[in-house]
Image (cartoon, rainbow, N blue to C red; front, side):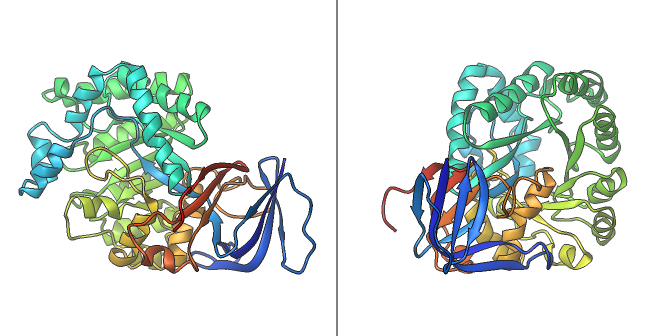
Amino acid sequence: MRTLIKNIDHLYTPDLNRGFGQVLDLQKVHLLLEDGYIRQIIASDQPLPEADEIIDASGKCLLPGFIDPHTHPVFWKTREDEFVMRIEGKSYEEIAAAGGGIRNSVRKFRQASKEEIKEISRRRIARFLEFGVTTIEAKSGYGLSTQDEIKSLEIINELNDEQALDLIPTFLGAHEVPDEYQQNRAAYVELVCKEMIPLVAERKLARYCDVFCEQGVFTVEESRKILTTAMEYGLKARIHADELAAFGGAELAAEIGAVTADHLILASDEGIRAMAERGVIPVLLPGTTFFLGKDQYARARTMIEAGCQVAISTDFNPGSSTTQNLQLIWTIAALKLKMLPGELLWASTWVAARSLGIERQAGSIEPGKQADLVILDIPNLNYLPYHYGLNHTYMTIKNGRVVYKRLNGY
């Protein structure tokens, strides 16, 4: 199957020869796809090859399909009541301490069948394609029992096989201490380390293990134990770090060689330097800070100046960031993290791909890579974060196949 995307106004892709934030802008070109892969970039003065399908991208921009490296898409009920509580003045931390937050989602998750959760998750996951996202990292973390964490990871793996979007599974059994272990935290850590992780690894249900290393959740010592255990079983480490307090999560990520450290709103200077030295990828989630109504954002410029290549993500979840719109996150990151459009392109394509170990097949537009692409109805790259709140996607292509096309005009 050969597909020709013709008359592309701008083909934007990370310029891997020049480094983070630098963009290759190819104007008035065509792109040939074959059997799900990128075959050839064709200049405007070259003859067009024959193709089975022709897509006219006149007046539009072509980018690599977006990659969202931090999501929590498998849950049962939403938490809009807690959103209203925050409007009325309660903080996320106060709601969680009173038994809301993640533990609220856990109780609801356990009440539903696997089939019910799978079907509603399927619908939520499909929305990513509408916004030009072609791959997501997908975490468990709303089961917090061996049975329910396995159920969550099974859903992620089954949905990965059954629909177009690629899902990279992460085990997050250490998302919170569930109700039944609130008075015996050590026993829950033992359950995660001695029962959950070995079973997840044996069944090959996840590539990564994550921990919510945070004040009031898991300590640095508990997080170290869980992540080093996971690494012994062949899982790679990711870590929720320094979101609500300066807690040493960034330093821990560097110490153990985690692939990513995520959130990092209150990461210390020492932690940022350590991440840069060890090659830890900061995954920044400005939509979460925005949605929680907080004023302090992660110090992206400090991280970039230290030598980190940063990724950005929606953090899609039912409590603190209920959006699949990565384009909106571009705007928030531009305004609050002071990231430039070229940096945002890298952060949501190449660096995001590298954080998931898929940079050889995704994250840039190069012959031989998967044809994961998004056609945007915008005049140039700067326009994407500028005209905010709108879905600019004209078409999403996954493995060379059109999986979303906007039906109406602009």
